[in-house]
Length: 85
Image 1 (tube, rainbow, N blue to C red):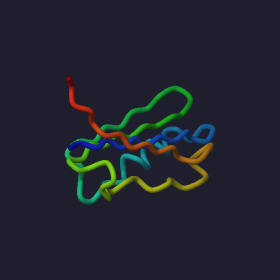
Image 2 (cartoon, one colour):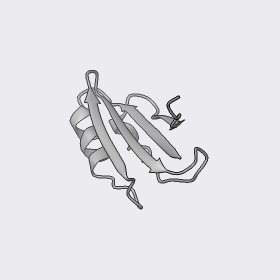
Image 3 (cartoon, helix red, strand yellow):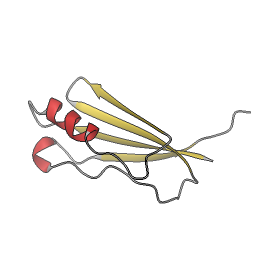
């Protein structure tokens, strides 16, 4: 079973580059089989990780960044892969 974790934060004004650098500097241990980082207009940063685990498994997640880097609390979602019919 594969679970995907989405971690999304919105940077404080003029802090997008710092927030992105903070995310990229935080490895997860153990490392996920797959990790991707995205940036979007408005200072949003998205980190996706994929794990070979059930939906309720305990897997490492990025912590909250320093409050001064963000405009609002971090959003987190957890998804379970659905087999194709």
